[in-house]
Amino acid sequence: MGVRVLGCLVLLAFFGSCGNGKSKKNDVSLSQEMVKSGIRVENKVSEQKVDVYFGDELFTSYIYPDNIMKPCLWPIVTSEGTEITRKYPLKTVAGERADHPHHIGMWMNYGDVNGIDYWGHSEATPEDRKPFSGVVRHQEVVEADADDTQGTIKVRTNWDAQGRTQIKEGIELRFMDKGKVRIIDWISTLTAQEDILFKDTKEGMFAIRVSRELELPSDDPLTLTDAHGNPETIKVINNDVVSGDYLSSEGIKGEDVWGTRAKWMKLFGKYKEENVAVVILDHKKNPGYPAYWHARGYGLFAVNPLGQNVFSDGKETMDLRLKKGESVRFAFRTLVCSGEISDEEINTLGQEFSGLY
Image (cartoon, rainbow, N blue to C red; front, side, top):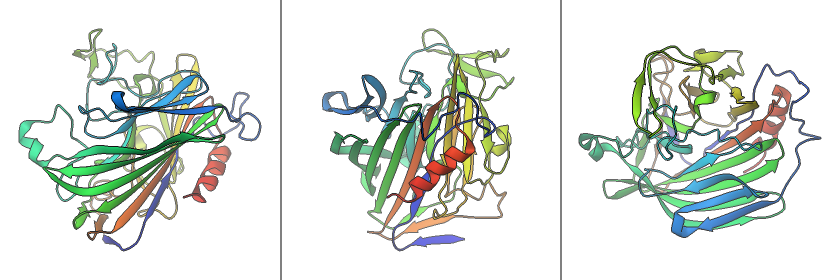
């Protein structure tokens, strides 16, 4: 089925937490424990980034260096100081997966826009693929500010394909501190500069690449970084620090969640002594709701409302079309949780978010 967009579509999603949904002693209480703290946003033009601080602690940075092919949020840090995002390829550490160098932090793009691949493009892309690869290029910071309730970053980007701009994008990022739960709202408006087809593909759309600790345990051989950041193949796998798991709104668990529809998805695990959770919730007004999930055991956690063919074994197709000048809006909420959060609390945050933007 093709989808023609004449106005503005809204995609709303969210991140929250973990476990079996039952409240425990260390659960996050939205009514009692989630409190505001001072928020500071600093635009550091010479460093090609905008930093977001909760109190004196760095929460995340909007970064746009020339050597990555889209802007992203990296790192992302819990209230206890744990970086939940994979450090590779931007930072040299031992013991991280050295795969998919285009998976950096939290980002939004797509794998087939009029035949151009924005999703898979990185410095490692082979030369013969470059003509078919696009760059989401940062243009300007429109606003970087904070008040008593939230920090805000507004930017403009261009989706560029071999010298031409296919899409002009406005991104609004909002950051809220609720104590054990840190919130990111990502709102993106894409305006077509030519007739656009988002061709159905699994390679998309809003994603976060998490640290090794939040991957799902596996005995398959893999490539990890050594102490110098160089990749080395490991055949005997040590899963001592790996504890991630998925749970969908439909009750599906583990790696079986990939390619299934769900209203929301939880990724949760333990990072050293800290329980950490990330949850994405879909919005009922989104195209293709409830969305399919491109959620992998190796650390890629993505929701893809536009990719349906592969996930449905060819039974469904979602081709999103924009005429030149038309716009489509996507909005995602991310909850970064230290400790556990119940399904009820996630649903409350979902209802709250569904009334915004």
